[in-house]
Image (cartoon, rainbow, N blue to C red; front, side, top):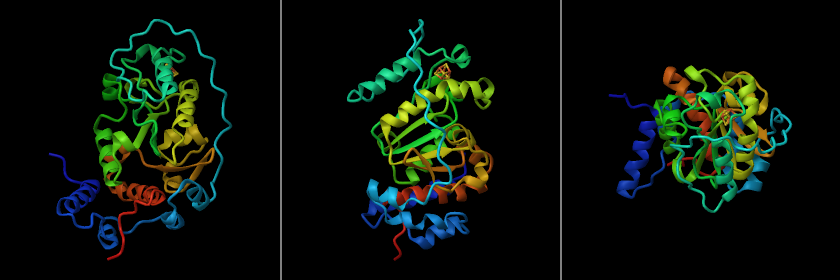
Length: 282
Ligand code: SF4
């Protein structure tokens, strides 16, 4: 049986408060017990007071680098015959352009990953969400189901999102740099990422989230042309006016549990943007 980790304990604390009707927030002292010492986020403190988009934008520290220039979306190609079994049913009937893009991606063969996929993995959650997570690419479980982050790393991401007091399905949107599985769970190659990025950029433009969370080194590289997740995690970036927070990929956290405290510090900075910092001092 899996040993409870920091995110489980945070969720338990929140649930206990819900049951009793007591204050569901966690004291700062309690969080400090979980997280001490938290490093690298002192510069995020002003974000705690930000609650609306203009104020958030004003409060976010200056970006360290602008993203790469936007590339014009590739022209729509005539879709070849394609098996789209496993593609989840439409969940955004009020956003036809989202479903239209999903259909386009399901037929895509623009890179070699299209030949080996079982399912194209488009996104999960709500395309109207204010919080967007971007990972690297589907693994075996995601390839089998057509849904991102459903394996062990996905389970941890779900617990991280719950610890942030967000609902994964309705309050977040989750996508990847590439939509088809790189064989052997390797990182996407440059040409594969380049072929797929126009789809992700169109998704980000449609969702237009208040905050993006970058999960690991791959989205940092392909959205910002930056390397060094260990150095850059916890530092706000700017994606076309949208604050973006790099943090560790859940798969890395499974391999390196001590890094969870740093990831939680990054997520707390994101929570503060939404006014969800769970620790009023008692
Ligand atoms: S990874 Fe992206 S570009 Fe490559 S085939 Fe799949 S949807 Fe098309």
